[in-house]
Length: 222
Ligand SMILES: Cc1cc2nc3c(=O)[nH]c(=O)nc-3n(C[C@H](O)[C@H](O)[C@H](O)COP(=O)(O)O)c2cc1C
Image (cartoon, rainbow, N blue to C red; front, side):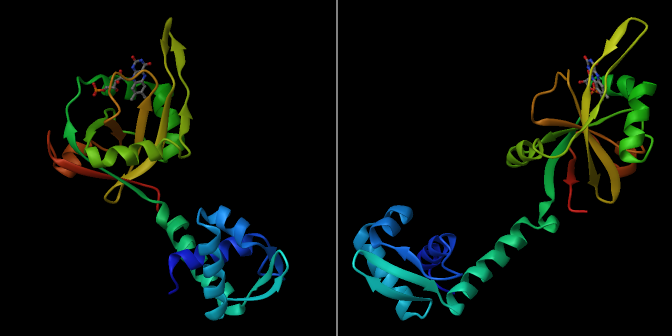
């Protein structure tokens, strides 16, 4: 493995086209791109050449540089690491927290047919009328923010008997092997560290959990 600063330098050259053929580089411009001095940039380019990672011909005001096969190989290894980091398999999120009681309002809303139908279509199961409230640990709060950017499905509000019910959004998830959904009602009175989870059955009973017991919710990674 080559030092990270050499890899950065190879990347800058490659971004200019240095894998395909010679590109014009001055140590001044290289220094600016890497936020290092011109002298350091010049030393770094020399170092890359002596390691066989680039070939270069010196011109009056700079140099023409091409990445060697070995140089390109180093970048490719880095690329593969990033593929592993950002691959579909690595896209799972884990939210940990503990069970907290609500006042039972979730049960009322989850019993309403228009909501029920939409959840069934989205999640593939008829949700149990009730929500399991989970207070997230502080270390799960950044994860909670990340999942905001995922592909939530809108659950449309409706009006019946002169009463308006608001929109919600839902994201499929799992608790262990149980398929579940995180529900975020548009008008919830809960703070950000509480999530509501729905499932095909009464989760408290199925999981054998009560208030303060730990629960882990997984999103993605299917
Ligand atoms: C599908 C769904 C729709 C909801 N729609 C509304 C709504 O229209 N207006 C509202 O004040 N709260 C709505 N809520 C939120 C509840 O008021 C409340 O935040 C939550 O479900 C609390 O449940 P709990 O008391 O069982 O913990 C909705 C909740 C769910 C699950």
